Length: 145
Image 1 (cartoon, rainbow, N blue to C red):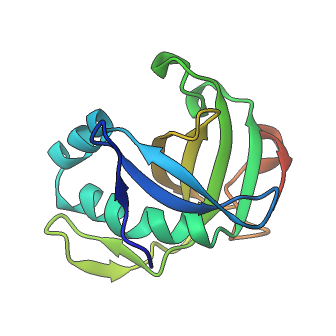
Image 2 (image 1 turned 45 degrees about the horizontal axis):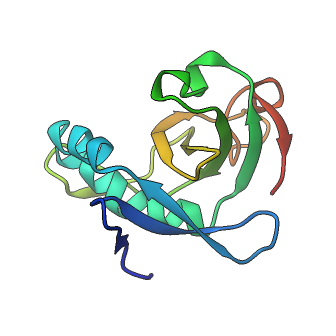
């Protein structure tokens, strides 16, 4: 896996699959967001450093057009655009050590139209397709991968 690139403003650029071309694009995580994650502890920091790059490169699904307010980042000044989904190999404990992936959960990464990751978290999976988040058909406008 490629090392994250640092931008001039101190943000990190991660490689992500571009669902439209199949090639690579860049997703940014702002310096402010990384600081907030670091304050939450080693588990959250480990997810940011280890889970996010893997999901962005090999998602089980990518959805476009976020319909629900809790998934959107209107408070961050942008419209929700895509959601990358996946089941990581590991989860991370409070001390940063790896454990097994959470059973019945999928990891979601929300990206705005400027290709900035603004939220990521574990959520319940769809009981009929555990690779997808629950209520995916109503939460997003369309599935592109």
